[in-house]
Length: 241
Image (tube, rainbow, N blue to C red; front, top):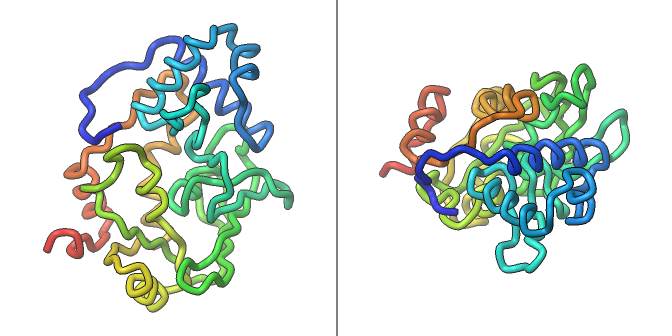
């Protein structure tokens, strides 16, 4: 859905379905199909589909709007398909995460409380490994220590249809020189976040996701996003010239 969606509230069906999606994905490392959701919630096919559309509009999930079964592509922070970030729990692969930025939020979810989780990814410039360890939403370690997150798409272009392009633009880099090289490779200028700035950016979502069953929709409003970046000390001048 487009940016600047007017404020709205989720229906009780959407709230019930969202909680189930979180619980199922955390437990299984992959998303449910429509029958799984039906068995857990008691909702009909049509009610589930409408709940999915609400959650997509409120930037909680991403669905394929062109499919009859409204196939799930993402339930943030999780990805239904192989992405650039793998989540490991207790040393074992758990799931794919949506992007480098969303990955910084995963460890804060209640089922992972008190557990050190490992994010395995790579530098999008050279494909060298990047490993990040998180616990309860806080950074425990990063290898290499110079790792950062590069965002190549201006918030003015986020969520013009859905968040897929936005997520695709958020990638780990080994260091600033690799971020600059990636810009030449991709033909896009971007902003650079330290890992701590990225954690601070996703903090609102991490503090509420799954903890508050009545969490309100997210709304992508570019001016507010850019103001938030500036408050974190991120240089956004590349998008303002």
